[in-house]
Amino acid sequence: MTAADADGWVRTARDGAVLTVTLDRPDRLNAQTPATWTALAAVGASLDDDVRVVVVRGTGRAFSAGLDRSLFSTDPSTPGGLGELGQMSAELAQERIRTYQAGFRWLRSPGIVSVAAVQGHAIGAGAQLALACDLRVLTQDASLRLPEATLGLVPDLTGTSTLTELVGYSRAMEICLTGRAVAAAEALTMGLANAVVPADGLDEAVRGLVTALTAPPVGAGRETAALVRSAVRNDPESQDAAERAAQARRLAELAGR
Image (cartoon, rainbow, N blue to C red; front, side):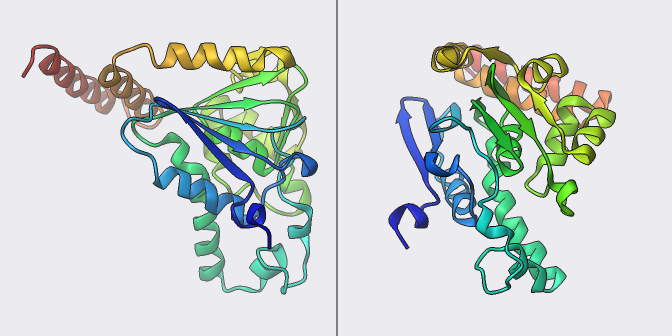
């Protein structure tokens, strides 16, 4: 096993309040393995209070083509493969998948806003990683696809909840069951993408978005992000109460209390 295998081909770089997380396996279109998800979860666990924005990206011509092909093996001796999971008890298989999901769910942790910079393909686990982020900037050649159902599986890396939040029930149902690709232009129309830019403009667009996200005072930015997240699930009365409580905290800080 090489060092890259062990760390799941995940690289990080810090610039002040911005942490960039990069999938660095361009020869395999940034295909993911369980080691990738373990490494991503470790990044989430290591966040400190000074990180405000996390940018997730992939090197090369694709964001991520999804699951590494070797893991589709039905041979139970293939570590991390579908065959190995299929031979486990339901309880053990679910616990294993829960640990994989931890590599995705932290991208909506309190205190940060996450941005996926997506070029080329984002398929399966790749699409779910992009969906796990709060915001997405896509290049014009980008597309997202969740083909799991067509392969006899289901999206199990947090993708069903994040997709449904973004596009609604009926669109999410259609996208998940047909497994079709959603091209960048359509993604922008349906709210999957916040922006679509030329391939050579991705870095600049992400920098501009990051600058805007970090412009508000830290406390106001974090409280607002928390309110937007809770609004997805709260009833109006609960959300109104959350707004009142957050504003009271902001006013007290501004007043120096």
